[in-house]
Length: 428
Image 1 (cartoon, rainbow, N blue to C red):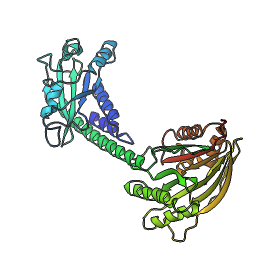
Image 2: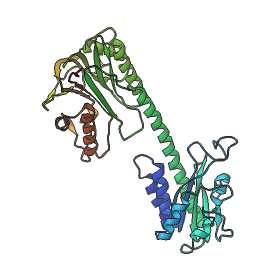
Image 3: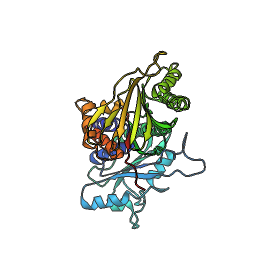
Image 4: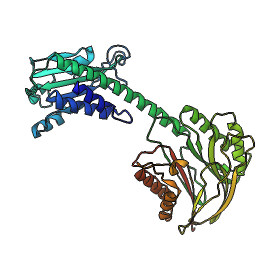
């Protein structure tokens, strides 16, 4: 009961299910409490075993060694390193238990080949001095995911039925954690793919300026976020937009796509940011989520850029002058998708050579440390001022690093940033 209680705590003490962590914790516990040696072998996410939902028809499932835990002496450590690369072959005890989904108890080892042979031809049982073996399937009730095998060389005595019952229960626990981890990983991969489809694959080159962008996903949850940014042509100039949809998940992603593409389409008929945001507002009125956004319309001439800003309830744009002086644009406007009578907040800023325009989401300001203190506007401005001489990519990289250091890598919300720097004219 003590072993099972400890195992439950070790396997579930993770904010996000982690298959690798769970497997190593399980093996370490078994090698410390029940056996001299613990082996855990698993099939891949799509391999499966015999029975419902298992394997590719006509193909033998592949069982791969995940972890080997043994004594701490130098000889055993060297042996463990060698056995880590020895995957169970058909005919060995772990593979047969996996294939048949039937546990096996060998109180006294009869044949030294039960665990196969090492690369040097020496039977594994002889190499580790195993005198008693026990192996159970790792199954979740639907599929067999692998096998747990224990070996004893004397200190723990011959394995008995009580040992078998404990390890069978532990195999069930581990299987459920692995299943949850794999489902979570697949969901996270889908969310990452969906998120990538909502952002531009590459930023266009803007004559006379350098543009950079950063996007960081929240470390909690596997849902697609609601942040987006884009850079596109607006009349004879360019437009930068950055927004944040309320909430996460597939529904938020649909609203994100609507907002982003409405602004792109609106830029074909309108040139002022406030008017383009107004078109997006009309499209979002029937949605059940609101969107905050800031858009910058750029009129570019040699050595100067005139920026027309439209804000819809979003954190204001920031200007970092070449000499390190910082100015925040005016706030204003209400979020998109709330009211038919929409009017964006407006501002106009002139940028000279070396000046940088920064658009960012509220995930930057609201990142928290362990004491729940927010990163805030002042820290953001300090980081930007300290890196005013760097490239836009370096400035955003400095903000990213400062954020991760501040919150110890634990981002509670997505973070998006876009920076535009006015370039000096090139000499022919």
